[in-house]
Amino acid sequence: MRPGTLILSCLIGLVSLPGMAQSLTVKEYIDSFKNISMREMIDYKIPASITLAQGLLESGSGNSRLAKTGNNHFGIKCKKDWTGCTILEDDDALQECFRCYENAEESYKDHSKFLKENKRYAALFELDITDYKGWANGLLQAGYATNRKYADLLISTIERNKLASFDTMVINGYNPYEQRMPANIEIVDNRIPSTVVQPNQTIEHIATANNKTEKRLARYNDLEHHRHIEPGDVIYLRPKKRKASVSTHRVQEGENMWLISQKYAIRISSLYKKNLMEEGTEPLPGTTLQLQHKAGSRPDTGRSIPFNREPISEAAFQDTANTLFHVVAGGETLYGISKLYRMDMEQIVKINGLKSNQLYVGQKLRVKNQAEAKAVTVQNVRHTVQAGETLYSISRLYKVTVPEIKSWNSLDDNGISVGQVLEIKKQ
Image 1 (cartoon, one colour):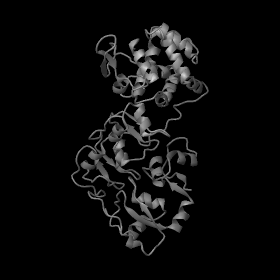
Image 2 (cartoon, rainbow, N blue to C red):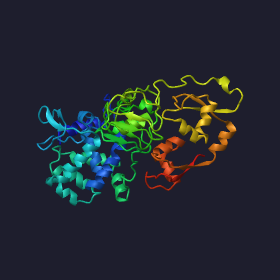
Image 3 (tube, rainbow, N blue to C red):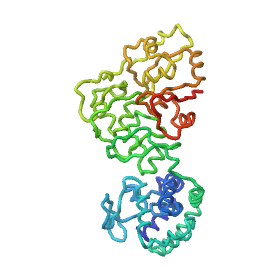
Image 4 (tube, one colour):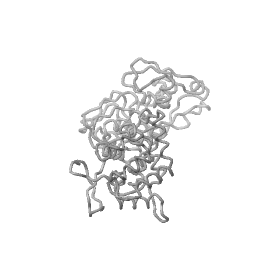
């Protein structure tokens, strides 16, 4: 812990003195870490209000150097048994050793273990779990901090920000673990720390919770190829690697280069280079992609230059005034578009004069006239699950969300089986 001087410096951060810029406000910090605090309450029986208030105070609302650089939100020093990464910071002495973590959640977990496994704090766990005042005073008496006002600072932080409401939520049965959306892909271990996008979460929220910038996370995750993140998407917190931990991948229906790059934590630029493909093109199902070494030849279904780069001339459609066009988005396939409009792939190929099934982002395809399209979109779709499909790939196919499919079909989890029929409500 960083007693005394740390508390004074963090108090300055909390009251936001004029002229001091903060990258995080108190409210933003609470929004980012309230669920983590409640999970720690469930796992370690420490009031969420106490954990969150300590994090606020000891990290200066996440703005201290230890928090930003080392993901250390509680000022825990190295000690002789620490084998993880370290960061040096002036405290009671110059350049003392402090622990650092892969992400902020690890810091919260380590803080909980520190209290739970240290005998000097054992009496605290005999208190009522909602007695935040007893916990605050008990921490001071046990020597957690040397600042005599530490308990008062904790209590005032809890009451000013209504943090006790999170204790009440857990006591009343709220389980933050049950709210977590599982990953929509099975990650093949490449030892890169990651998180999963949750409902109503943005890249900004994820960046804040993990002390990263949005720009950095976008670069780590090749988000120029996937501009709209969705619940269930895997987001890496460190750069992906230039090769995967396995040698090849056989492309399944509904997969695209971005999903494959996330599955194996491989940079998408490396994935394209290894397979002699131009960025922006997509492989067809059945293609075998190289993940470790450069391919000897270009895949049969992946072209180095996207076919039909220029949009089809408007003159080609002058015979149908009410023609509906589909503009190809990132990750879409001819198969997916044909399913969306209830057309045969061959029909789309024929009416657009295509010489291959390869598409490119921004390509304009003639699909149906307006009356036909309207008749299609007001009806529900019954989708029969094919080999290799996932709820995520099906959601992409019909431009709906995984939670919607689960709700329409009363699914408790993401498990589906080949031949299963799913209702897709395209209203």
